[in-house]
Image (cartoon, rainbow, N blue to C red):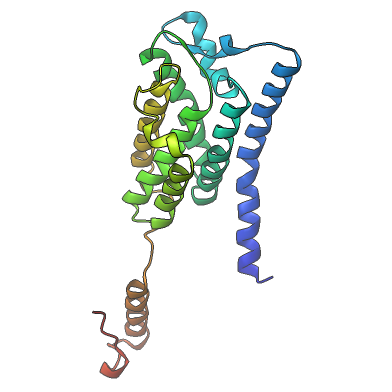
Length: 224
């Protein structure tokens, strides 16, 4: 295996560890809840109530059923792995800011009800990657978010109040927080996606720098 490929493979494996550990914790919580025959919805965020503040820490760990958990697990793993892979310097900050600020804003602004699940984080991660991809002109980042949105079909509608038992507030707030974080960390992450014309322009500049003069006319390539 070439050295460069080995480095990227190791980087990918390391990027998978934090989201995998968090998902393991969420699944363990649900399994214990089912085994005990309990319902831990009261650990969610209840907006406006002092007793509901504990949900800022616990609500992403609580899910109504396994279907809810599965729907959140796959996009959570893909999106957070991408953040740890492409944004090594700020990945933990993006995770914790998304976690805490989204929870605080849900407690402050959402309907007086219990809000549970990690979908607010999913929306925050998706918005972060997409907006950062636009700012940094990186198609790979935008493509990851769009792919997840496409596969996670209801995601685009999740920020609208069309289902009475869905916390659309968590989705909308998470999405907003992710977009704001992308702006705050606009100088972090991979650079613009390079196309063939960009790479050829770079080659020409390198030739000019090395020789001290422009490359001979016959070596230039016109891009139509």
